[in-house]
Length: 201
Image (tube, rainbow, N blue to C red; front, side, top):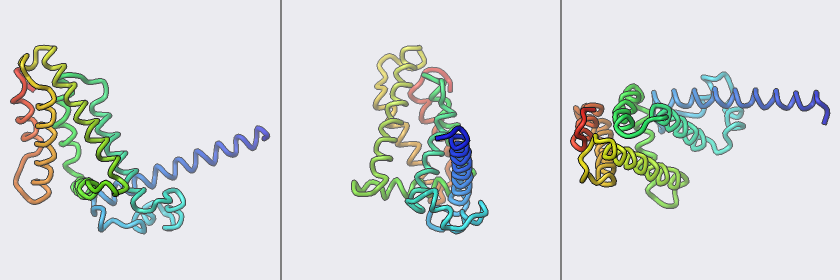
């Protein structure tokens, strides 16, 4: 293969990657605004100035593949907030993740609906959600363990129990908020985590 052919292929790859990124951004916006059920591939295509066939060329799994890409993006944003944090600093960041998503009700709803559907072991997203929850639980458990080591929590705290309680509270508040309850997810999460700590969040 000549150097010009190599450069051409690299250029095509970069254009394809950029187009895929545009599609994911549009899908994120559509699912955030309209939810997964109402959000359509045709609307996503319209926002990026493509045909529906063109979008599906990049996401051959269709709407499900687009949602998976959006879910991955959501996780990336959360991970960016938690990056390089440990102990109480990581725990302080958990309510901030919730706060960063308050204007994305449709996306939270889509995520919650899909995670409920994915409880079925035969669901295509089952492994994704199971592994994600286990990973999140381990990360929070480690943060509580570090908080104990750093003197920010009582020595007899059970880090695993505290992590599962914090995760259950956060997800429960999310469901109540989606169902119209007047709850403050950010403050509720912060107060719940605080009860396991001796240092102010």
